[in-house]
Amino acid sequence: MSDFTPIERTKVRRLPDRGKYDSESVYGILYEAFICHVGFVLDGQPYVIPTGFGRLGDTLYIHGSAASRMLRTVSAGVPVCVTITLVDGIVMARSGFHSSMNYRSVVIFGNAKLVEAREEKLAALAAFSEQVMPGRWKELRETTDAELKGTLVLALPITEASAKVRTGPPKDDEEDYALPLWAGVVPLKLTAGTPIPDLRLPPGIQPPDYAKHYKR
Image (spheres, rainbow, N blue to C red):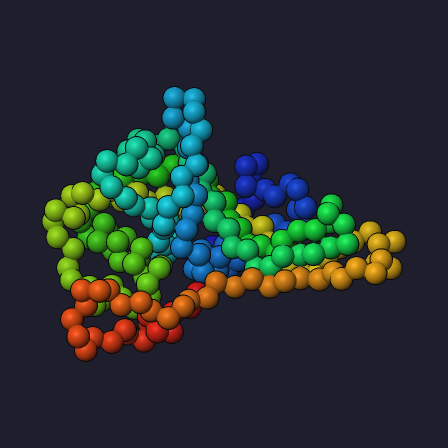
């Protein structure tokens, strides 16, 4: 995994000190997230569609129904912009102007291609599963030919990418620090609740450790 060279469309311009172009930052965010937003233009109309994703090495995979307009459009080679965002905290400053959020985000540009080889398609589906449910893929029944046929998988090379990260406390105007108003950061973290069994689960089957101790 090599670092990314900033180019015209990946360079962070607003608050450039928050820009990150190293693979550790970019892939660290992709490792923790499991939802992305895919932006594309069809017949002059822009669309941004939320969807799950998986990653293998330097390739991002997205998938869905073979009837999906987004996937059919993107598979034709139209340019796409994929974004991923994690929110780590609410930054409560002493003014609305300086109030913000602590976040980590990634933007990826490129052209996706349709995955047709059976083995790569199965590997991508395993990557999707492991992205959301680490440890579960090896326990699932095998994917059927009909399921494979009904699923489109697209591969997007991660070659044009950048991250943008905000951390730390509020950055207020100097004269505002004397105001009698609490300021700071409210941390946010995605946490899992207690697993809820399927009503049709046979008696005696307990949730696996990766469900009982699920975390991102």
